[in-house]
Every structure is written in C-alpha cells, then in structure tokens.
Image (cartoon, rainbow, N blue to C red; front, side, top):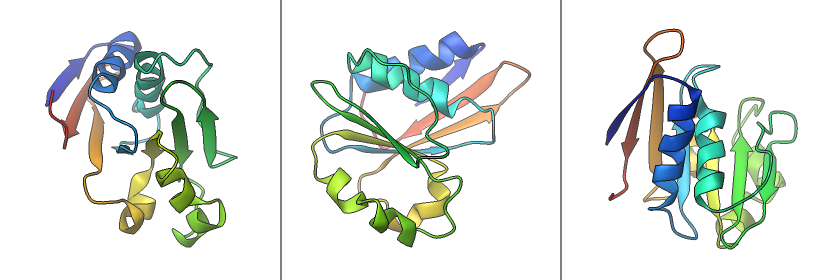
Length: 139
C-alpha cells in the first residue's frame, strides 16, 4: 500500500488507518531519515488504537509504553550499538505481552524482527510531502 502525505496531519491519519488492521502481537518496523515522520505516524497508530497519550520518540529511553485495550510499545533503536542491547531491556518479553510493537530505526535490529513484521517506509518528497509505503498487512 502506498500513501501520499502532504503534511504531518496526513501522516498521522495514515497511522490511524494502519491501526485498524493491527492485532495484538504485531510488530511494525519503521524506516526513514531523521524528520521523515516516523513518530507522527506512530502517534496516529496510538490514536487508532484508542490510546489517549502524548506520543513522543523514546530516543533516550529506547522504549515508551502506552496502555490501552491493545498496548503500544514504541521502540527507538537510533542509539543502539547492537541488537544485543534489546535483550537487556526485555525485547522477547515485549513480543509476548499482547501489544503492538512499533520500532523506529529498525534497520539497527533487523535480525531480531520476527517473521510477519509489517514494514513502513517513509520517504521525504519535499519539505512537508511524504511517500509512505506499507508492506505486509492486508487492508
């Protein structure tokens, strides 16, 4: 699925749309440059999961947890030196907790992503324009 986004609000709405197809245990891997809109998209996923929380990038904490009927675990791998660091924070436990795991900078832990991972690629097409490509999910 390809989605054209003209502004941050469109990117958030794309995340809300994807949330309707997500199920407990899903992992969503995000790819895109700094400022591409990964966190905005995940903000939309949270809204779509009916989570009323201020979603921000967990750059310094590695993971933020947002509780709802389906919990959202928001990972940021930007500062990881190796995927082994994920085991130290309980990556396998998060995968088994029945929530949705959204993983920014997932290319840094590609070897730990489970089969069936949904992949979201966000490319800048201008100052505020984005092309969002979602792979691995049925609409």
